[in-house]
Length: 336
Image (cartoon, rainbow, N blue to C red; front, side):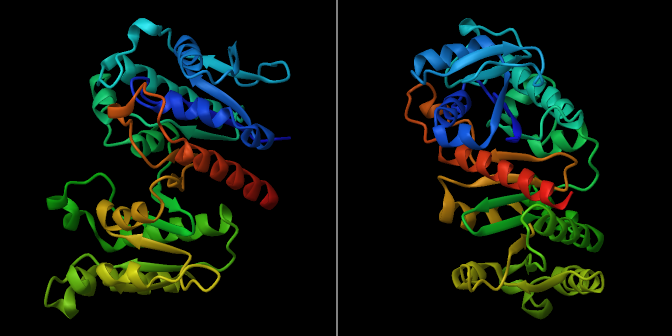
């Protein structure tokens, strides 16, 4: 059986529906997964016609409902129409649709009606307008699925980067880094590399927080007092972690497979890890929620309001997110 993967609409005023439909127009994708769209059926139909993707959409009540050969099921969770669309603009109704789609898709995954979910790009501002007061989708999904230990991981080609802090203002980063949290993130990343990526004995590089990894305390004490002790504690748990490394030079000397020294990198904050990752794989980066009770991936880009509706959005990152979800489902099935 092909994995049944739910794909949420994201913000329908952005490029989410476009990259989703372009991806599903690929025969390769439909050979490897059974996709289920979750969102507004009428809005998906509008974009299907607008971008001439010629996908046969079938409205269903649940992902388990039967469809005919070639049909793509759409679970309608929001009664939106073309009149609700405001291309390139932040709007509460788009946030409501995106939020409801996320909630329902998590439920379908927990009920085993779906094997995984891929989330379309959303606007945090639109979600906030709709009453979803979370820093981002990762935090939302952690709460909806009641997952206690979740680590955002970004994947681009052969580079995997986990984050200790996610959507935290720079002035608050240091106070959100403490020994127990770094150890927890290392445990989550190590488990995910084994369970989801099939790496039997993963090696993880840990970055420092300060310039030059603190220069042995001359430029900050977090490396000496928190990060290095956390690495040592993780090693006692059987985790092969190394560092802390100075972030500026680390990525410049990182070797690619098959001679790679490390299977993943743990960065201390958002931009420290994501800037080099996006430089390597901006068009095919994937956001993965390691440690979540369900499997969730997402394209590593935003709503791109500036090109919404123009038909020029690149579906590469969405295709990569679908491929990764399928791979993780397969890897987990092999272990079960």
